[in-house]
Amino acid sequence: MAKKYWLLKSEPSSYSIDDLKRDGKTDWTGVRNYQARNTMRDSMQKGDLAFYYHSSTEETGIAGTCEIASDAIPDKTAWDSKGHYFDPKSSPANPIWFCREVKFKQKFKEPILLSDLRNIKGLEKMVLLQKGSRLSVQPVAEKEWGIIMKKIVSSQ
Image: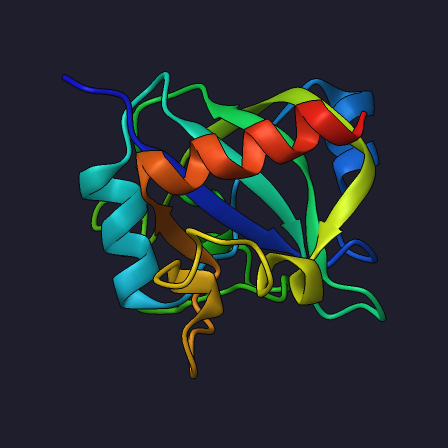
């Protein structure tokens, strides 16, 4: 199957690219949107690549890259009754929410800011740049991935 590309959003105050670099890998838990869950569960494949996007911060943007390192697995945070992502309808016998393990690939010297992405030719149709696009897990076209990675190489 052909490699696919994604964008994963995380608030750096919650879990940043530096945290992933330190840990090496982590389960991408806490996704509580059905469309994003379905993407992770059904469309992502082990070996796919993803941009690591810092959201809900003063300067939002792509901070680095990671690799999808596992098949879809039940998101155990849904079962923690004291946790922020608890869902009483989900159980080990009938999981509703799924996650993927991701592993660190690269931290960019400087993030590519959302404002800069809007000005890069060829990214006009990128899901991230569409009005109302708020999903924490988004597809990235192979062409878009190539344009952004070329920009990183030329700026580093």
